[in-house]
Image (cartoon, rainbow, N blue to C red):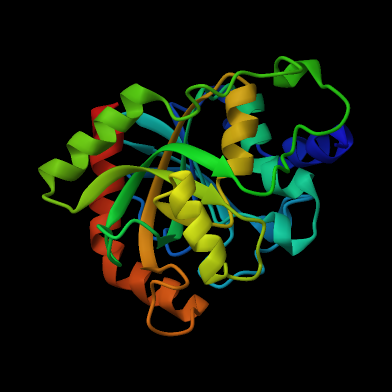
Length: 272
């Protein structure tokens, strides 16, 4: 990857972004953009203004960086993400994580919307990601080794930090939410999976499926960050759903769950 790409983006951010490390960074996936409780906004920048970031091309991603304070915590939030299937390269996909690393951040929460594979799940449920399956075996660390990003062969035994999973689970239970820990299957997209693929992922141990999160998680873990993953089940996966899959389902499910999403994120932040 091109380090100058990241340099330009970091140089654009204000000095306030680097004055103190954020206590937590959050990447907000489809429909999660309005799920933040903010006491004081320190910096707000549209993605389109940040060199290399670019405006999101997917509905449900508002596309702005917000540095704010809440409950005594300093939080760097990225409302929306770029995806590998957009064809913009790995730099744009992992840019938020690299900016967090340069800010000195050590903890990151990755959110998304997913399709439910596990028969116990239904739209509107939440899944705390405990592990993942990279079904396409592509990741942003392929290429020349960059020492600032950790070891050449980083360990991925516990990508999703156990303590954060426990805190998220406790926050969900306090809200009496339907929640479980589960395994996320990553596909490259932009097509939805076939029923045969979902059948295979089920036998591999996946509970949910989606087109994001794993590249950022791998990159953040390699850089030494503590990673958490949280997914809203927005629809049944192919072959389980009785109707063709559409992105409209994702948007509708996220809109319906928005108040709960905000409470769950807030509960996690307050428990840190």
